Length: 346
Image (cartoon, rainbow, N blue to C red; front, top):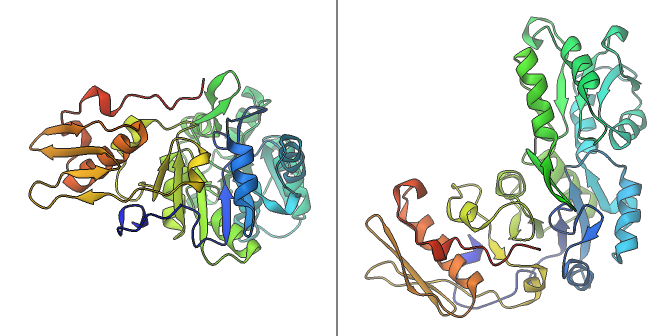
């Protein structure tokens, strides 16, 4: 991975022509901008395209763009790629144009369904051709029940398609972490015993839409979740940044499986513009040094040889050492200092 290759220290932005940022947990939490996010992204937009990718299906692209502008970011609706837009790509391949679609979700999903030329219904009694489900704070038992009624027959037995905009288990809010669309999709799955086809991250259509829309050749994606953001970027062949201002914490980074490991790990977005320290691996024992922090894996023990002067470099060194060891995290004794979390936004 580019994160740990080579001796020359460059910034994560070097050589990129587009920056694609997740929103919740990267740019804002609820309606509050995260520290250093706005000014760092404004600066990143100098000389390259800046786009926004979100799995949150509750709002329209124009509403999202308006919020970003209020926060001080350059944003028009075409700069925002949403999971409902990706869902429409899938829906067009599965049902005839103009079909009636049962929508479980809010305005962001309804608007995209109608823009795609479909008819919105909220009732299973209207004989819908498909169910499309996305997050909205207003989704409750009644909407979930209608989806279950419409999806009672498995698709392989003649039932209708079921597309979920995304399956994020949680969503960051100003007051804390709340249940996301994945929990609501899971409720319907529990009722009907079927699995939804997923349009958003970590699936690739939403990334492919962004790259095509911006004509990007060397995009960089910034996310806060390993299981959706980083995994999805890797599947799409896009370099990735994990920023520790959202959901996933140091302990998740250390335990990240192959395929969900970011190219860069940042404490906050100011570090987009800082030289990224290369990891130096010592041949005799595999000890990894990043900055002034050094970590090695000896048998089942993860050892901190030097904590260094920057917690983020200690985490980077620990992640590289553990990932290189090929050992599952649950089989290792990891010192508490390695998964301490001084990065959490208060």
